[in-house]
Image (cartoon, rainbow, N blue to C red; front, side):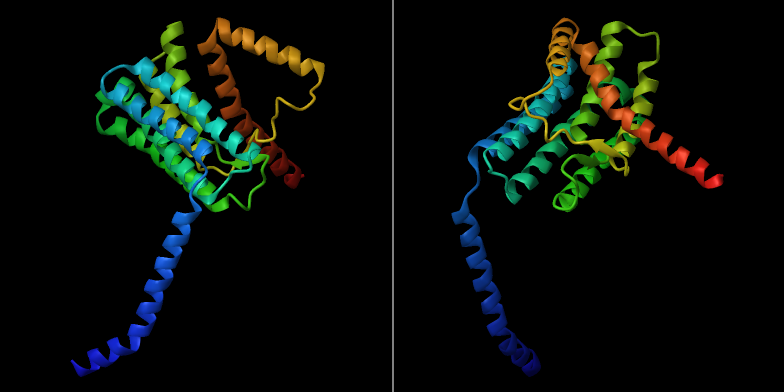
Length: 266
């Protein structure tokens, strides 16, 4: 007992100092505040993902899917606003990742599971979990590497692109009534997207795209054509955009690596 009291008396100054330091840190963090506008957009993206889950549970699958698309748009917008207004912060990065996990991890997982794979029982949710954990690991890795990776590329498929691919895959199959087994396609696609998110394949980040900079005339013509096609056939066009973005990088990655192997052999 005496030894314990002696030990506590020695530690007391350090405990007081730690408490004081923690209180000062908390006070400073509260006084700093947060940037309102970009975090408001992130909150709207989070709400859209959450409301998508509610609609999936209630069987309103098309509404749930389009709400995920709204989250994708808002996710791109909040980062753009933060960079333009120079209001990026550590809080914003962490909050954005938490929002992304709901909007692009949980929401697509629940949508695809309830709409397509619920009847497959354990196999269905196990395959969906591969996608979900892939999204979680992808976002965790991004937060760790945020200050050490190049701005023009991402390591692994971005979670918004994976979510968009999942949503528009179902939309395309339903709208165009393709003669394929939707359930089997999604059982393959979801874990594949999860694995692509945690892969080391580089994807173009598109952070340096700007509509305010001078562009070649051909870019304007191409952009106008894409907008017209999106208006006429939105599901088809978005499906093609996401499928090209998601799978062109892996194809190039394996093609280039295969060429390197061939060169080494010779």
